[in-house]
Image (cartoon, rainbow, N blue to C red):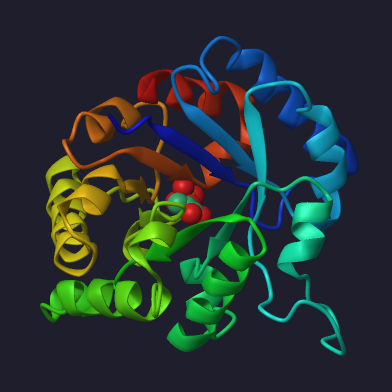
Length: 253
Ligand code: PEP
């Protein structure tokens, strides 16, 4: 049985006060659900990680980062290592979010290095994969998703794969209000699970968690979660409102 997983990506939002308030409201709203029925994580900006970790302490809500660098330390101005994230109490980290790939120009190879380093540092990576609208329109969706999986998981053993969560996030659905239909999401999730079966075998693929992300709201979470291969949700905009995010957690649970 795959336990559902809901993660809130706060992106470049909140401040020192609102990040703690939001984290506390998520803890209060998900009491009795978080950890017991659904894994819940919030992913604040780096600078608020410590205070959010403190705000959720002794609750079922975990904390993750939105990015990580692959080098453990050294002359890499502005970068944050897996060890640093672990040190401040992070459990999860996003790797290859589409905004990092398409706005910040991260290559497939860099995403793979980050994921390997995150695992090596004891973090649980969430590998984001997904196609642009023009790639979908050109019939390249499967090729793009397969390339993101291949490069993101390069060299990873089946054993290590069990620590990785995949998030399918069609770029055309992120922050646009245009959600993939439940059937579109299911089709790609099934494609991802088949890809994992081919590479890692049926057991690992059957246990792998595959999240959907892209304009998820309280109103569409239930239908998306009803799909056989949708194991959870990666939520951007709607994770900034505690009530809305809690509705999504309830739908997933
Ligand atoms: C995201 O940033 O991962 C995301 C899915 O954003 P939104 O829910 O706002 O589309």
